[in-house]
Length: 265
Image (cartoon, rainbow, N blue to C red; front, side, top):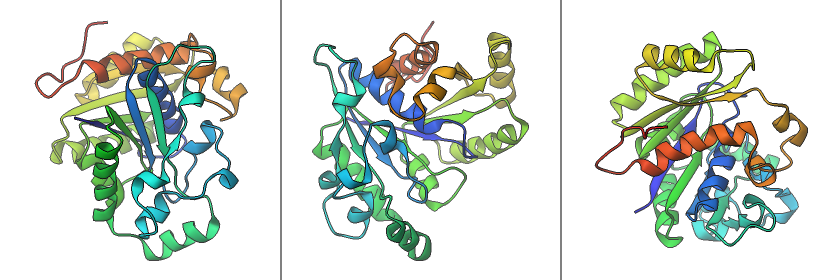
């Protein structure tokens, strides 16, 4: 059975797309079949991390939502971009991008789309591609589409920075997730300055939100140098940022329907 993991943040700019892409790469490197679906239809971008140019894409999530294709027809195999060069065969990564065409984005903004059809596409993708994990890169904030993604998730990763606006927005989202009875809630604290006491900060956030901090990720020059031109887990698998994400991986892989507690580190 596919485990559905939504990566969400209350505000933009938290780094959730990088986290989603790198977690997908790490899961594939561990031998899993992984899907990614970009439901940030208003401002899509995760495809860039996998080197996908708009001209390379013939069908997208938008086409499925408008009834032009089956959801699996909008899928791209991005495994080569997720695995380190020369690495032995492992799992696979499949991406369903959203359209970057201005007309398509304008239509979504003006007309919306049937939210129940998005749920149908997510479930169909899991089944037809026989996925172990499906990662949903959500739109920041709270709207109908985001609530759907959260409601059908087995795990919600809430990404926040050490910032008071992020703290307040995260509290709101966590309350909604608890009402929706999401089985596993995890916090990812991102873009933390190198001089901070990571352990103390993680304990403070865990206690304040009554939710585990799965990892604390540094504000890193590695991602700045990449400039969204690749997936760091495939390019520098031992980078501190990637090592930090392995803690999240441990939570995700250890969790099952009977036990959603954190693994020991």
